[in-house]
Length: 108
Length: 113
Image (cartoon, chains in turn orange, red):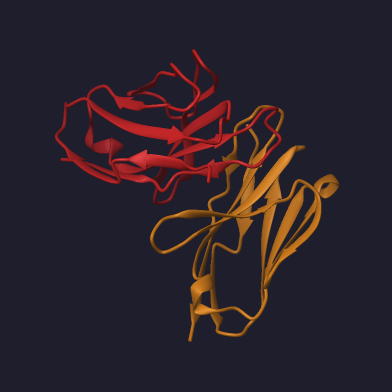
């Protein structure tokens, strides 16, 4: 099956800092999503981004499908950004395969 | 608003008992999925369904079963609960043709003692 690698595994930020999370995948995909799992365990949809660039407030994401990677940018981080960020991809079937996640801790 | 809901949110059961976790979605999505989340393993696919009467095994299906009698529901059954099945379980749904966004329920924390 398709392999999904996320880096870094852990990230500690001071409030107000910017950061970039990376997702590499091993094969062509027709769907890529970024999720935020908050401290209460909920999986929140951030972006559906099989290609191109999208922005939502302080978050933005870019997927370069031909080079098999996606980036999630967090700008002016806040403590509420803490949690685990997952990248998930779909190949030719309908199943999402998840990366191991990046744990982000934002300190006040 | 359309949504996907799981019940119960928390459950404690004994080894050997049969347990059923419910998943109900009002998106009218054809695709439904069950995942489990464990430390060190991320989210792993248990079973999935592409429509009514269709069910398929995922990567960690042993000890689990699902049935799809209507579009809205995909219950997950643990036939004989084991301590190794202590986990957080997530249900998800997405629309055909499968290149659209998937949405997740709130999760069910299951403890097998």
